[in-house]
Image 1 (cartoon, rainbow, N blue to C red):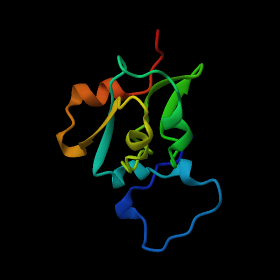
Image 2: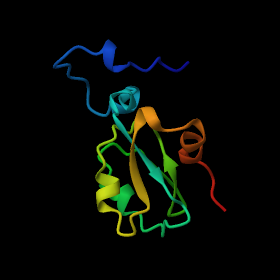
Image 3: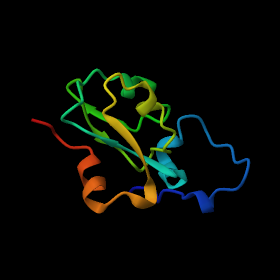
Length: 109
């Protein structure tokens, strides 16, 4: 049985949690901007993965497969560090369903 993830509104200011508990929190609800990846331009250098403070970059076999919006806070570090500018930060409320679906972690061919 999995636990229900807390949302931002359910957390109290100044809340401290046990070590390693971030995976139990739906921190993506804090996001104002969402990263969108142009996989045609992506070179799979994995710099975004290395710099992401929330481990929100999904990867498989050394290739970026998407962004886990459940944990992405929209800080934009991935976009700033990307050497080929394949990550665009877009206002989360303006992200279309198709764009959100394209960013979901998946197996790449």
